[in-house]
Amino acid sequence: MTTLSRRALLAGTSLLAAAPALAGAATQFGVLSIEQSGAGEPLVLIPGLACGAWALEEIARRLSPRFSIHALTLPGFDGRAPIEAPMIPRICADIAAYVAERRLKRPLLVGHSLGAFIALKTAAAHPELFGGIVTLDGYPVFPALAGATAEERAATAQRLAAQFSAGAGDPVRFRETLRGFLAARMNDSRQAERFAVRAARSDPAATAAYVVETLSADLRPELARLDAPLLALAATDSYLAGRSEEEISAFYANLLAKAPKASVLLLREARHFIAVDQPDVVAAAIESFAAGLRLGRA
Image (cartoon, rainbow, N blue to C red):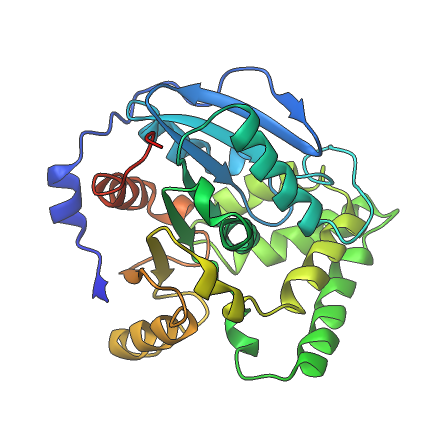
Protein backbone atom coordinates (compact mmCIF):
# COMPACT_ATOMS: atom_id res chain seq x y z
CA MET A 1 0.00 0.00 0.00
CA THR A 2 2.25 2.76 -1.22
CA THR A 3 2.03 6.04 -3.07
CA LEU A 4 2.89 5.85 -6.74
CA SER A 5 6.16 7.56 -7.57
CA ARG A 6 5.99 9.40 -10.86
CA ARG A 7 9.76 9.57 -11.26
CA ALA A 8 10.41 5.90 -10.53
CA LEU A 9 7.70 4.64 -12.82
CA LEU A 10 8.47 6.93 -15.70
CA ALA A 11 12.15 6.14 -15.52
CA GLY A 12 11.47 2.43 -15.89
CA THR A 13 8.72 2.50 -18.48
CA SER A 14 9.18 1.74 -22.16
CA LEU A 15 5.90 3.32 -23.23
CA LEU A 16 5.87 5.38 -26.41
CA ALA A 17 3.55 8.36 -26.04
CA ALA A 18 3.52 8.91 -29.79
CA ALA A 19 2.19 5.44 -30.60
CA PRO A 20 -1.07 5.20 -32.55
CA ALA A 21 -4.27 5.49 -30.53
CA LEU A 22 -7.45 3.56 -31.16
CA ALA A 23 -7.83 3.78 -34.90
CA GLY A 24 -9.65 0.73 -36.19
CA ALA A 25 -13.38 0.51 -36.79
CA ALA A 26 -15.36 -0.88 -33.89
CA THR A 27 -16.67 -4.43 -34.17
CA GLN A 28 -19.72 -5.76 -32.40
CA PHE A 29 -19.62 -8.79 -30.13
CA GLY A 30 -22.85 -9.51 -28.32
CA VAL A 31 -23.78 -6.28 -26.57
CA LEU A 32 -20.22 -4.95 -26.71
CA SER A 33 -18.63 -2.56 -29.18
CA ILE A 34 -14.89 -3.26 -29.37
CA GLU A 35 -11.98 -1.33 -30.88
CA GLN A 36 -8.58 -2.97 -31.23
CA SER A 37 -5.12 -1.44 -31.34
CA GLY A 38 -1.52 -2.36 -30.61
CA ALA A 39 0.18 -5.72 -30.56
CA GLY A 40 1.46 -7.93 -27.78
CA GLU A 41 -0.04 -9.26 -24.58
CA PRO A 42 -3.84 -9.02 -24.44
CA LEU A 43 -5.54 -6.23 -22.48
CA VAL A 44 -9.27 -5.54 -22.18
CA LEU A 45 -10.08 -1.89 -21.44
CA ILE A 46 -13.46 -0.81 -19.99
CA PRO A 47 -14.36 2.90 -19.66
CA GLY A 48 -16.65 4.46 -17.07
CA LEU A 49 -20.11 5.99 -16.93
CA ALA A 50 -21.46 7.53 -20.16
CA CYS A 51 -18.07 7.16 -21.86
CA GLY A 52 -16.99 5.34 -24.98
CA ALA A 53 -13.62 3.76 -25.70
CA TRP A 54 -12.39 7.29 -26.51
CA ALA A 55 -12.32 8.13 -22.79
CA LEU A 56 -9.28 5.87 -22.30
CA GLU A 57 -7.68 6.65 -25.63
CA GLU A 58 -4.59 8.26 -24.08
CA ILE A 59 -3.98 5.15 -21.98
CA ALA A 60 -4.44 2.97 -25.06
CA ARG A 61 -1.96 5.15 -26.94
CA ARG A 62 0.69 4.72 -24.29
CA LEU A 63 0.11 1.00 -23.83
CA SER A 64 -0.25 -0.03 -27.48
CA PRO A 65 3.49 -0.71 -28.00
CA ARG A 66 3.30 -3.43 -25.33
CA PHE A 67 -0.29 -4.71 -25.47
CA SER A 68 -2.94 -5.87 -27.88
CA ILE A 69 -5.74 -3.64 -26.62
CA HIS A 70 -9.43 -4.48 -26.83
CA ALA A 71 -11.24 -1.28 -25.79
CA LEU A 72 -14.95 -1.59 -25.07
CA THR A 73 -17.90 0.74 -25.38
CA LEU A 74 -20.83 -0.44 -23.33
CA PRO A 75 -24.44 -0.56 -24.57
CA GLY A 76 -26.28 2.72 -24.13
CA PHE A 77 -23.10 4.82 -24.26
CA ASP A 78 -21.65 6.92 -27.07
CA GLY A 79 -24.62 6.41 -29.37
CA ARG A 80 -24.84 2.65 -28.90
CA ALA A 81 -28.28 1.16 -28.41
CA PRO A 82 -29.19 0.42 -24.78
CA ILE A 83 -30.25 -2.99 -23.56
CA GLU A 84 -32.79 -4.02 -20.97
CA ALA A 85 -31.81 -4.01 -17.31
CA PRO A 86 -30.15 -5.68 -15.59
CA MET A 87 -27.34 -4.83 -17.98
CA ILE A 88 -24.17 -5.65 -16.10
CA PRO A 89 -24.62 -9.46 -15.85
CA ARG A 90 -25.10 -9.63 -19.61
CA ILE A 91 -22.07 -7.41 -20.21
CA CYS A 92 -19.91 -9.57 -17.93
CA ALA A 93 -21.05 -12.71 -19.73
CA ASP A 94 -20.21 -11.21 -23.12
CA ILE A 95 -16.75 -10.09 -21.97
CA ALA A 96 -16.02 -13.65 -20.83
CA ALA A 97 -17.40 -15.07 -24.08
CA TYR A 98 -15.31 -12.65 -26.13
CA VAL A 99 -12.12 -13.59 -24.27
CA ALA A 100 -12.86 -17.28 -24.76
CA GLU A 101 -13.95 -17.09 -28.41
CA ARG A 102 -11.06 -14.86 -29.46
CA ARG A 103 -8.68 -17.08 -27.50
CA LEU A 104 -7.20 -14.24 -25.52
CA LYS A 105 -4.95 -16.04 -23.09
CA ARG A 106 -5.08 -14.61 -19.56
CA PRO A 107 -5.62 -10.97 -20.61
CA LEU A 108 -5.15 -8.03 -18.29
CA LEU A 109 -8.55 -6.55 -17.41
CA VAL A 110 -8.48 -2.77 -16.85
CA GLY A 111 -11.52 -0.68 -15.96
CA HIS A 112 -12.32 2.83 -14.81
CA SER A 113 -15.09 3.49 -12.25
CA LEU A 114 -18.15 1.64 -13.64
CA GLY A 115 -15.68 -0.23 -15.86
CA ALA A 116 -13.72 -1.26 -12.77
CA PHE A 117 -16.87 -2.58 -11.13
CA ILE A 118 -17.60 -4.62 -14.28
CA ALA A 119 -14.00 -5.84 -14.40
CA LEU A 120 -14.19 -7.07 -10.80
CA LYS A 121 -17.53 -8.78 -11.32
CA THR A 122 -16.38 -10.44 -14.55
CA ALA A 123 -13.10 -11.66 -13.06
CA ALA A 124 -14.85 -12.99 -9.96
CA ALA A 125 -17.31 -14.95 -12.11
CA HIS A 126 -14.60 -16.27 -14.46
CA PRO A 127 -11.34 -16.29 -12.47
CA GLU A 128 -9.68 -18.77 -14.80
CA LEU A 129 -9.80 -16.38 -17.77
CA PHE A 130 -7.77 -13.42 -16.56
CA GLY A 131 -4.10 -12.86 -15.75
CA GLY A 132 -4.59 -9.66 -13.78
CA ILE A 133 -7.02 -6.85 -12.93
CA VAL A 134 -6.34 -3.11 -12.67
CA THR A 135 -9.02 -0.79 -11.34
CA LEU A 136 -8.81 2.93 -12.03
CA ASP A 137 -10.49 4.60 -9.04
CA GLY A 138 -13.26 2.01 -9.12
CA TYR A 139 -14.24 -0.32 -6.30
CA PRO A 140 -16.46 -3.28 -5.36
CA VAL A 141 -18.79 -0.94 -3.49
CA PHE A 142 -19.33 2.80 -3.86
CA PRO A 143 -16.91 4.25 -1.28
CA ALA A 144 -19.40 6.70 0.21
CA LEU A 145 -21.80 3.79 0.82
CA ALA A 146 -19.28 1.26 2.11
CA GLY A 147 -20.91 1.24 5.54
CA ALA A 148 -24.50 1.54 4.35
CA THR A 149 -27.22 -1.09 4.41
CA ALA A 150 -28.56 -2.57 1.17
CA GLU A 151 -31.69 -0.45 1.56
CA GLU A 152 -29.66 2.73 2.04
CA ARG A 153 -27.53 1.95 -1.00
CA ALA A 154 -30.61 1.36 -3.14
CA ALA A 155 -32.25 4.61 -2.04
CA THR A 156 -29.10 6.64 -2.69
CA ALA A 157 -28.66 5.00 -6.08
CA GLN A 158 -32.18 6.00 -7.10
CA ARG A 159 -31.61 9.61 -6.05
CA LEU A 160 -28.36 9.93 -7.96
CA ALA A 161 -29.73 8.13 -11.01
CA ALA A 162 -32.60 10.60 -11.19
CA GLN A 163 -30.13 13.36 -12.01
CA PHE A 164 -29.27 11.58 -15.27
CA SER A 165 -32.71 10.23 -16.17
CA ALA A 166 -34.10 13.77 -15.90
CA GLY A 167 -32.18 14.48 -19.12
CA ALA A 168 -34.28 12.04 -21.15
CA GLY A 169 -35.82 14.04 -23.98
CA ASP A 170 -33.82 17.13 -23.02
CA PRO A 171 -30.32 16.93 -24.59
CA VAL A 172 -29.23 20.31 -23.20
CA ARG A 173 -30.13 19.33 -19.65
CA PHE A 174 -28.40 15.98 -20.00
CA ARG A 175 -25.23 17.61 -21.34
CA GLU A 176 -25.23 20.13 -18.48
CA THR A 177 -25.66 17.35 -15.94
CA LEU A 178 -22.70 15.52 -17.46
CA ARG A 179 -20.63 18.71 -17.53
CA GLY A 180 -21.15 19.23 -13.81
CA PHE A 181 -20.51 15.56 -13.06
CA LEU A 182 -17.26 15.54 -15.02
CA ALA A 183 -15.98 18.95 -13.90
CA ALA A 184 -16.13 17.80 -10.28
CA ARG A 185 -14.06 14.73 -11.14
CA MET A 186 -11.27 16.09 -13.38
CA ASN A 187 -8.49 18.59 -12.82
CA ASP A 188 -8.88 20.25 -16.24
CA SER A 189 -12.22 22.00 -16.86
CA ARG A 190 -11.52 22.10 -20.60
CA GLN A 191 -11.19 18.32 -20.65
CA ALA A 192 -14.44 18.06 -18.73
CA GLU A 193 -16.15 20.18 -21.35
CA ARG A 194 -14.83 18.03 -24.20
CA PHE A 195 -15.85 14.84 -22.42
CA ALA A 196 -19.33 16.19 -21.70
CA VAL A 197 -19.97 16.89 -25.38
CA ARG A 198 -19.03 13.35 -26.33
CA ALA A 199 -20.66 11.69 -23.32
CA ALA A 200 -23.94 13.45 -24.17
CA ARG A 201 -24.31 10.98 -27.04
CA SER A 202 -25.13 8.39 -24.39
CA ASP A 203 -28.66 7.41 -23.46
CA PRO A 204 -29.86 9.19 -20.28
CA ALA A 205 -32.09 6.32 -19.15
CA ALA A 206 -29.31 3.77 -19.66
CA THR A 207 -26.85 6.02 -17.80
CA ALA A 208 -29.27 6.19 -14.88
CA ALA A 209 -29.80 2.42 -14.97
CA TYR A 210 -26.05 1.79 -14.70
CA VAL A 211 -25.95 4.07 -11.65
CA VAL A 212 -28.72 2.05 -10.02
CA GLU A 213 -27.05 -1.29 -10.76
CA THR A 214 -23.62 -0.27 -9.47
CA LEU A 215 -24.46 1.90 -6.47
CA SER A 216 -27.00 -0.60 -5.17
CA ALA A 217 -24.49 -3.44 -5.25
CA ASP A 218 -21.71 -4.66 -3.00
CA LEU A 219 -19.21 -7.00 -4.65
CA ARG A 220 -16.98 -7.40 -1.62
CA PRO A 221 -18.14 -10.96 -0.85
CA GLU A 222 -17.40 -11.96 -4.47
CA LEU A 223 -13.76 -10.83 -4.31
CA ALA A 224 -12.74 -14.05 -2.58
CA ARG A 225 -13.26 -15.84 -5.91
CA LEU A 226 -10.61 -13.75 -7.67
CA ASP A 227 -7.56 -15.73 -8.67
CA ALA A 228 -5.47 -13.13 -10.52
CA PRO A 229 -3.53 -10.33 -8.85
CA LEU A 230 -5.46 -7.08 -8.46
CA LEU A 231 -3.98 -3.57 -8.54
CA ALA A 232 -6.24 -0.74 -7.40
CA LEU A 233 -5.08 2.71 -8.53
CA ALA A 234 -6.72 5.19 -6.18
CA ALA A 235 -6.80 8.97 -6.58
CA THR A 236 -5.97 10.99 -3.48
CA ASP A 237 -8.27 13.85 -4.58
CA SER A 238 -11.32 11.71 -5.28
CA TYR A 239 -13.75 10.10 -2.84
CA LEU A 240 -11.54 10.62 0.21
CA ALA A 241 -10.08 14.03 -0.67
CA GLY A 242 -8.73 15.80 2.39
CA ARG A 243 -7.78 12.67 4.31
CA SER A 244 -4.20 11.59 4.90
CA GLU A 245 -2.59 9.16 2.50
CA GLU A 246 -2.36 6.61 5.31
CA GLU A 247 -6.12 6.85 5.87
CA ILE A 248 -6.86 6.57 2.16
CA SER A 249 -4.63 3.52 1.71
CA ALA A 250 -6.12 1.81 4.74
CA PHE A 251 -9.69 2.52 3.63
CA TYR A 252 -9.23 1.06 0.15
CA ALA A 253 -7.19 -1.86 1.41
CA ASN A 254 -10.12 -2.69 3.68
CA LEU A 255 -12.57 -2.54 0.75
CA LEU A 256 -10.41 -5.10 -1.07
CA ALA A 257 -9.56 -7.23 1.95
CA LYS A 258 -11.35 -10.33 0.63
CA ALA A 259 -9.34 -10.34 -2.62
CA PRO A 260 -6.47 -12.82 -2.21
CA LYS A 261 -3.85 -10.83 -4.15
CA ALA A 262 -4.81 -7.15 -3.93
CA SER A 263 -2.60 -4.08 -3.66
CA VAL A 264 -3.37 -0.35 -3.61
CA LEU A 265 -1.35 2.46 -5.18
CA LEU A 266 -2.24 6.08 -4.56
CA LEU A 267 -1.99 8.74 -7.26
CA ARG A 268 -1.41 12.29 -6.10
CA GLU A 269 -2.80 15.31 -7.97
CA ALA A 270 -5.55 13.22 -9.52
CA ARG A 271 -9.31 13.21 -9.19
CA HIS A 272 -11.68 10.40 -10.11
CA PHE A 273 -10.70 10.40 -13.81
CA ILE A 274 -7.13 9.42 -13.02
CA ALA A 275 -6.37 8.31 -16.58
CA VAL A 276 -7.21 11.84 -17.74
CA ASP A 277 -5.41 13.70 -14.97
CA GLN A 278 -2.29 11.49 -14.89
CA PRO A 279 -2.15 9.37 -18.08
CA ASP A 280 1.61 8.86 -18.05
CA VAL A 281 1.64 7.68 -14.45
CA VAL A 282 -1.38 5.42 -14.90
CA ALA A 283 0.02 3.82 -18.05
CA ALA A 284 3.41 3.30 -16.41
CA ALA A 285 1.78 1.70 -13.36
CA ILE A 286 -0.18 -0.70 -15.57
CA GLU A 287 2.94 -1.69 -17.49
CA SER A 288 4.94 -2.16 -14.30
CA PHE A 289 2.18 -4.32 -12.77
CA ALA A 290 1.81 -6.39 -15.93
CA ALA A 291 5.54 -7.15 -16.03
CA GLY A 292 5.11 -9.60 -13.16
CA LEU A 293 2.03 -11.39 -14.53
CA ARG A 294 1.50 -14.48 -16.70
CA LEU A 295 -0.32 -12.64 -19.46
CA GLY A 296 -0.77 -14.29 -22.83
CA ARG A 297 0.00 -17.75 -21.46
CA ALA A 298 -2.44 -20.50 -20.54
